[in-house]
Length: 421
Image: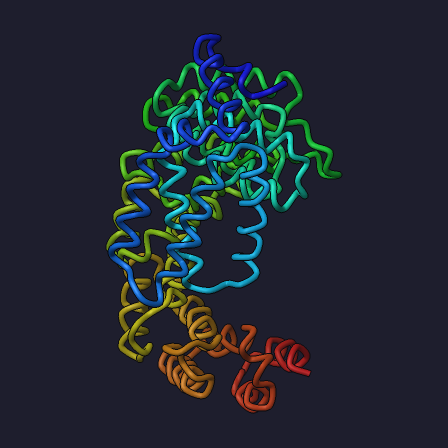
């Protein structure tokens, strides 16, 4: 079915007339419909002379192709592939101008263009590039229409189409949660999200569920619980894990999120999922994580897992300054205030993380020196032993084997040496 058929009859009639005019080379219609595109490109050309002249010309050529119907889109597909293979920064500017042109198209023009592209029989890569460029603006203008147009491609992951459609459901849900939820449930009932994977999981459905639940969580946590309960048990953790890592969980929703995890997930999964929220929170400093743990009334197990996750994330997060002993002193002080029994273990994990390489990371020798010092201070093997069990130790086997001689626990020392062979 053509996408135009999904529009109201009066609007569809306008689109057909416009599309036919463009396909027959009606330059007057083209000039009128692309007036804003032409102005934008002319402004860009006036502001960029010299070396940018060729890129402005390319942008103008691409703009012209937009208005030439089926043949124009076929030409543009070739140009986009050439730009992708060229990889020049100038081509990026052309892409940005082209995207601005597409943003000016009405939803009717976008639908007509998508119908043209479908009828061309282009290679999958070319078609995906053009669709990806058009679907985003259509979602911004009418997410419900975008989902109706592509309801037969909800699990099509080529070119990120499925991801874009999931974002359309999210955008629709923010406007009308009841209708968006009802539509999604209808598609599930119709088998649109049935999985062919051996494990029975539909990664696309998990993504759709996560984005919808993220909207529901603020207004109706009970509805989120009902949606989770309707999922197979092994998929509930996947949805909540994505929600935890989405960087969109609001402070006022954190307690509701934690309660849903406790109610819906096995005990073995709960602490791990709740701790994953701290990966993003840690970027704001230790205080943000402390506030989160207080807000959700974290259990000892949840607190321990979250503190370790936060410490590793903060040490591993890209820094513009070298990691120093002061960083580890601050880390140990904070861990000591939150999960004191884990201080030495988390220190060893963080030292391993910090020595994995990078401009501002610790050299292995420097990390090893700190591990030895902290182990001597605590009087246990935990910091050094945990550090020597990390991946960087396997990349520095000779140094690590020498350090392993300081492990007093014979069994642990033997296990470490075995892993360093």
